[in-house]
Length: 291
Length: 335
Image (tube, rainbow over all chains, first blue to last red; front, side, top):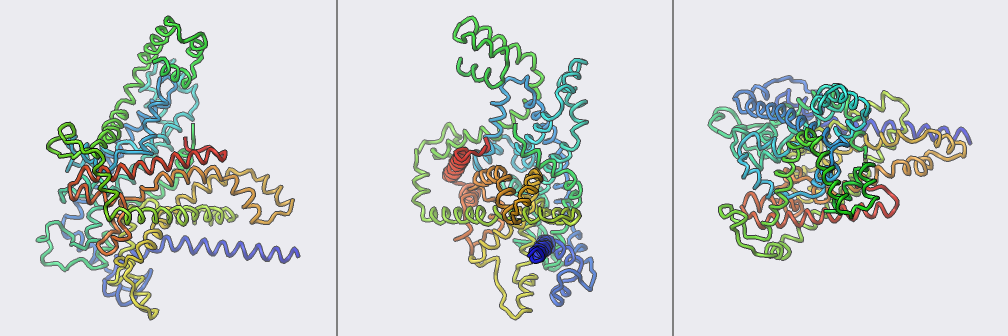
C-alpha cells in the first residue's frame, strides 16, 4: 500500500519534470532555431530541414542586411529612443513617485487616483493622436517618448518602494537641512538601486519594443525604429529599403535574411535579460504591493 | 467646499485637522482656519508640488485632454475647423456603428478573442506555477523559470515575425516538417480558420512565463506548516493543492483576473494588427484595428473616436462590475 503510493508519487514527480522540460523547450526553441538559421544559407535551410544545428556556416544574411545603412539607421533610432526615453521616463517617474509617496503632500490620494484611473479608461487612439499632432510631435522622435513619459504601473512600483523605506531616514535628512530634492537624490536614490534598475529595464524594454507609436506618429520612413523595419521586411516582405534603388543589384530578402533581421532586433533584449532576471521578481512583487 | 475639505481631512488622516472637524467644521471661523492651515501646508511643501508638476502636466496633456477630446465623437470633426468650430451631430456616429454590417462581426471577433484569453491564456500560468511548485530541485526550478519568461520581453513584432518564418508556406520549418511527414502544407497565416489558434498560442507563448512567476511568488508565501498538517491528516498532493495552495493564492488570481477583464477590449492592437490581412479579416478585425483603419488610414476621426469610446466604456463597466463581484465574494478587488 505504502509502496504503491510511493511509486505513484514518483511517476507523478518524473512526469512533472518531463512535462516542464518539454514546455520550456517549446518556448525557447523557436528563438534558437531562428538564430541558428540566420547563420546559414537558404539552400541549407531548404534541404536539411534542421531545427538547431546547420552544417553550413554562412554570414551571407548578415552581410546582406548590413550592405546598406538602412538597418544601421533603424538601430541607431531605436538605441537613441531607448537611451533618451529611459532616462527621461525615469527622471519624471521618480520625481512623481517621490512626491506622491510623501504624506505631507495634501491631496496625494486624489492625484494618485488620477494616475490610476488612466489604467482603466483612456481617450483612446484617435484623440491621443490628435493631441500628439497638436503638440507638434508628429514625425519627430519625441513622439515615441513624450506621449508615454510615465507608465503608471512603473511609477507605482517606484512609489511603493520609496514608501517602504524607513521614515526616520528621510526625517533625519530633513532635520539636517536637506530639502526634498536633496532627500530624493542623495538619500532615496542611492538606496533604491534595485527598484531603479528594475523599472529602468522595464522602460528600456518598452522603448526598444515600441512599434504602435511609431506607425501612428512617424510617417517618414527614414525615422523608423528597428521594430517597424523588421515588420516591413518579415511580414510585408516589401524589401529591405524604403528606397528600393539601393538594392537593385541584390536579390530580394529570402528566409535567412528575415531570420538575421529578427536576430538583430532581438539580441539587445536578450543581452539585458540576465539583468532583468536579477531584478524582475522584486519588481513584480513590488508591483503587487498595495497601500 | 466643505465636503471637499472634509474628504481631504479624512484621507490625510491628520490628527490636528481631524480634531478641527470633530469640533464642528460648519462654524465659519474654523473653516477659515482650516483653509489657512491647508494653504500653509501646501506652501510649506511647495517643493513636493514642484516635483510632481512635470508628471501631472504630462498626465493632463496626454491622458486627460484626450479624454476631453472624446467629445468629437458627437461632432462632425474637421481638423481645420477644430473642436470648437465643428458641427454637433449627436449620436449619429454611434447609430452608424450599431447599424454597420461590420459591427457584429467585430463584436463577435473581440468577444471570441476575449474568451480565449480568459479560458485558455489565463489558467495556464496557474497550472504551470503549481507544477513548478512541486519541483524540489532549486536549480531545475530556476532554470525552467528563466527560460519560460524570455518571450515576455519580446515585442509583438518579434513574436509575430518568428511565428511568420516558422509558419510560412515558403520554406517555414513547420510546413517543411509537415511535408516530410507526408502531409500537405497548411497556410497558417492566410487561412482564417488558423487565425484564432495562432493568436492564442502566441499569447500563451508570450505571457505564460511571466504570469507563472507572479503566482509562484504568491505560492511561496504559503505557510509550510499547513502542508505538514495536511500530510499528517493523510491528504494527497491533489487535495493539498485544492485545499491549501489554491485558496492561498486566490486573492492574486482574482486581482489578475480583474485586470485581465479590464483588458477585455485591449486585446493588443499591435498583436492583432500584425496578424491581420485581407483573407482573415472576417475573424481578425477587432475594435482597435477598426479604429486604426477607419480613423487614421481613412481620416474618419469622429466616427473612429465614437468606436473607441464605445469600446472604452464597455471595458470600464466590465472592470467596475468585476471588481464589485470580487468584493461581494469577500475579496479585496483592485481598488
